[in-house]
Length: 587
Image 1 (cartoon, one colour):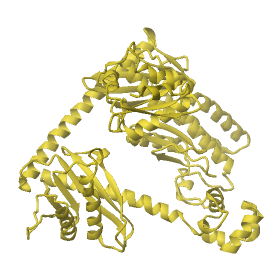
Image 2 (tube, helix red, strand yellow; image 1 turned 45 degrees about the vertical axis):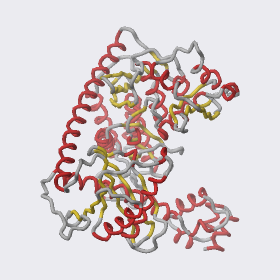
Image 3 (cartoon, helix red, strand yellow; image 1 turned 90 degrees about the vertical axis):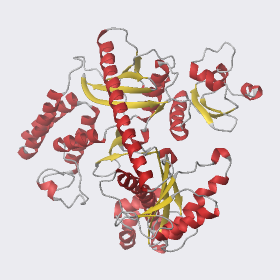
Image 4 (cartoon, helix red, strand yellow; image 1 turned 135 degrees about the horizontal axis):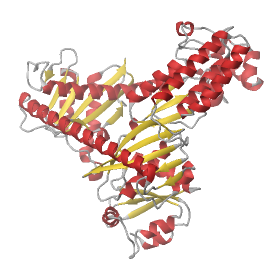
């Protein structure tokens, strides 16, 4: 490591990236004082954990990013770890699949949606959640107590759900926009776990409705009260002190680790989430907990007043981000909760390992059967599958998915935007994707992709023939097959008749899973491109009309056609006279 570079590091907060001799990122960390923190790794007196001692011997270069505060450093560190996945960082496994509940407060009649990301907007988010089933159950319960808008009808056009009180996002003589806002406020308090406060508020609303002789409204609020009270009776009481706490527990077994998180709100167990941790070898409990806290709360949308942990944490920057008190109990009720969480984490690990072993056994059996059916000389440890997605040649894309030892290896997935083929020509598009993929065999070692043991194409003889020509040019002699969707026939080079496997064949089921995954990945990318394309409109061609103005216009009028038909005065009310004049000139 260059000593001059170390000496020139500023005494400011930021994020540092250690790299090896090939430029690959080894570790990403944060610091309140970059110079002091980075320098601590290279001092002779440094007392490093075993994993970091090994890492320091591999460091050849350093990069750092300055930020304004320690909290900003924490958030940036979490983001970069997710992006680069360095081998010496403890990492939350599969965090890109976490779910959030989103209350669309930017809309006039807000809805409640499930999303994968938290955006920087005025909407309200809850999560992250690891279980999709638990999120669905929560939404089902929320809808029953608070019938928020779920239909696509405009507010002035009540749907069937409105008449049976299952979708109240409409305005009628009996139900106002303010009434609906009260429902959304109830949804938010419910999701926050503020049930006692919510009940008190609802009881006041019910009395006021009855006083005004609005008996239907009072009856609806009464039903909401009963629903919440019924739920509270079923919730496990943890504390009579109405505490808001997160109880973090750690379970370990050999090379695996898991976190159990109990979310306690108003003294009751509101939720339980469980997480797997990666890269845990030679890590202390304190390191694992610290890494989890930094990554989880960088994603979280709701913070408790206290975070209870099972190990002493030296770096307390998480307290600045969450404004929560970090507690390490040695005895008492909190210690018992940590112990109970540990038992849950260890059981989660046991179940995860058992499921993994069963999948591995099934995968190995399927691969052995596949090698026999296709007359391959060896089992296909790495299988690459390719698919093309387009409509009449527009927004055409290709996908590559990788299965390693019979299981999806999503870090190896790749997507391709078709660049050279015009019109609907799937075989030519497949040839382009194969050409661009296998150009990688000529790349530098660190950018080279491993060769597959088997190549699977979604399609028939046309795709197979096109791909074979490209592979021949590159001197690639790997086994390649095409799997047609309609009859699930396996087409092989130089064979007149396709292979037809029994529907009960494990090898066929594996091939279908791989082919379908390639199709899912391709169509997902196609839809993303198609949506981006359709968002473009005639408004994008008008000078001075930016994204915010466009959003205002579409929110006010609904479509470009209606904007075109709107009067100058109506446009002026929304965007002012100068822009209204431009709209009329161009449209």
